[in-house]
Image (cartoon, rainbow over all chains, first blue to last red; front, side):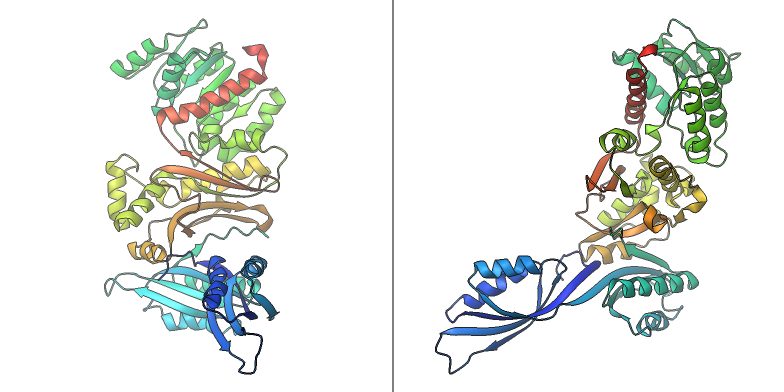
Length: 179
Length: 328
């Protein structure tokens, strides 16, 4: 796994339709700026129009990138002579990772997860766990996904309450967002 | 400027030694430890007094008490560095009041009085036209109070985040670096002299919370108390938690945070990016201030130590001298 701070992210999911010269290296040149802005490419749909006489290549890309980086990406693509035909609607995606310590199995881990999932507005998307010995406390890393900040805060509030009820230690990321 | 020094533990000795060693224009006219005191209005021979303290365990005459020094010695500023009592703040609160009542400036490293009786003491100092300064109470050598008061004056402080307890930071650093359990890292901290025999005060986050209260009251003057701080210590952390954080380029640190707009006052272990400026190693302290104009400012430095703390105290004394020239 990439060593990247992933504990508190606001991502934008966006699709783009790009047009570039149909010559070697062009697709790589178009993808490079996406990794430069910290983007994560989800899908690349490559359509070659057999009737095209312009010697161009149309590519549709779906990617996740950190909030506020889209403008930078657009200017980087322009520098690479990539023509952006269309940018789809931006969809926000929040992910926050926390660590839970305690008797996680004995306090019904699936119930803990379900308390988040059953909200309908947030869900547990990843779970890593370590159980050193049967009677010892175990430790897990839990990633929660939500579509906006308020939903994420609401999900975290539920998790804090559950952790308190089940005597679990909840470690949250330091988020320097004041407003 | 003439000063009286009460308390001759590690901090008191450091202050006395630095005043003797450096040509700062400071003269000590009274000194007291828990059992004795000595005074001379024309200035004590500091090294001689320290030598006597080292040889006999007392710095002066057993018939002279700390109270006598405060009430009778000739001085412009009192240096109050007696041991901290986090519950009552006494006897230090009494000492500080007695000096203020005599219209003497007070410089203290004592967290108890500032955390428990800040408003009362600050009001009393203002009424008497003298200063109460306490740079050394938070962050050791880090000039946080000077930064807030002068460097950042005119800024609105929106939030503070701090690594304010060296013991906890040492334990967490060692757990992350060596995969030690909490118990092993604590034992090591004790051997290194970084943790007390009873570590409760540090590892439960109480010490960090007291410092957070002092900072919050200094910045926002909202009269918060220790009981207002949402408190979680580091004593239940597992090595796995640090490893799981590490897997993603993060670590765990005990962070004290205050955000008035959110009514938030909290000390808790937090996941934090390893390259965040607050992630300092060992017993270091670090404080990040979030402000409206200067944006983010982070200060890093030694959070404890005899001479390091003396640096903060002497900074306060010289500030008083330079701003109240009449007593130079």
